[in-house]
Image (cartoon, rainbow, N blue to C red; front, side, top):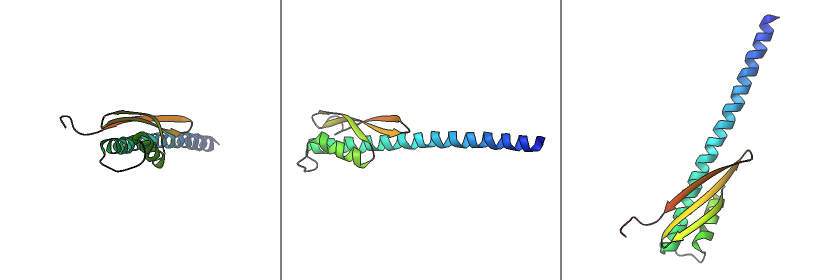
Length: 109
């Protein structure tokens, strides 16, 4: 009887740890997805603002479309000449992973 109780306890602890690790892993993946979406959105906005790509869309509208394609939502987009700063959110289990990125030409250009 004692062996059965011990086995059940070990199994319960292992299951709890597995669920916790899966939640942490999912949150880490979501944070990386948000970072990638922010980078891509900032690059798209900066390229559109500088004329590096030809598009009929406004730079921030293009950034929003790129972020959405990456599974995130564009929250803020600020253009300062050819320099773009964006902030995106990606949701996971009711929480939001937020990431910011800047893109534009190097200083001195």
